[in-house]
Length: 256
Image (cartoon, rainbow, N blue to C red; front, side, top):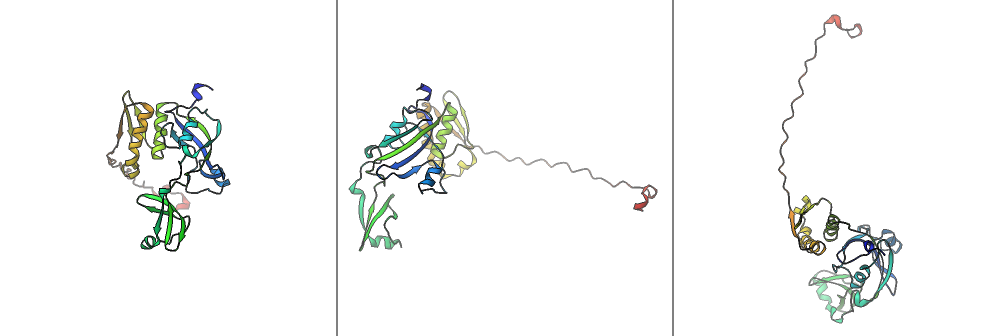
C-alpha cells in the first residue's frame, strides 16, 4: 500500500459507512440511501452521503477510529467493535423510576419506547406500571457489540480541501465560504447566513480547534463583510421620438 493511500491521524477524509448491532444485524446508522431503504429505516428528512471527518478528532467510537487509521483509500472494510470501544457498558445508575404524576404535570401519557427528556438528558421509557415509569438514559447502543462496514472514498489533498472538509464536518456545509491562507493566518470570509445563524456561533469554536489540529497552530480569522449597496445611477431616458409627418401624397393609396 502506498503512503499516499494510507490514512493517518490529521487527514480530512470523506467516509462512507453503515453501522449494525452485531447480535441482531440491525442497522442503526448509514450514509447510504439504498441501504437505509433496504433495511426499512429510510428517512426522507435525512441526507445520505459520505461524511467529512478529521481523523483522530474523537467524534466517532474509538473502535471505528482505530480501524480508519491505516486504512486504504477506496477499499471496503468490515470490522467488529466491542462495546468497550463503542458506546461502553450499560450503567444501572442511568435507569430511573419516575412517578407517573411527573408525566401528568406535563400533560404527557407515557408509553414504552417513548423518548423522555429530563435535566438535559434524553432517555427511553422501558416500562409503564401502576403509578410508575422506568426510564433508561443509557445510550441505545450501550453494552452492545457493533459491526461497521466502511470505505474511505477520498481524502483532502491540500490545505484548502482540508478547510472545506472541516467546515462540512463542523457546520454541515462549506458553501459560500471564501478561504485564503498565508504563512501564519487562515482567513475565512463568511457567507451572509452565518451572521444570523445561531448554529454558527457554536460551530466556529469547533472549526478553530479542528483547523489547528489539521493545519498546525495558525491564527484563524473569520471575516464578516457588510457591503454597502450603492444605488444605480439613473439610466438615461430613451430619447423621445416624434413621429415623422408624412405628406398625404406620400401615403400609399390603401392607407388613405
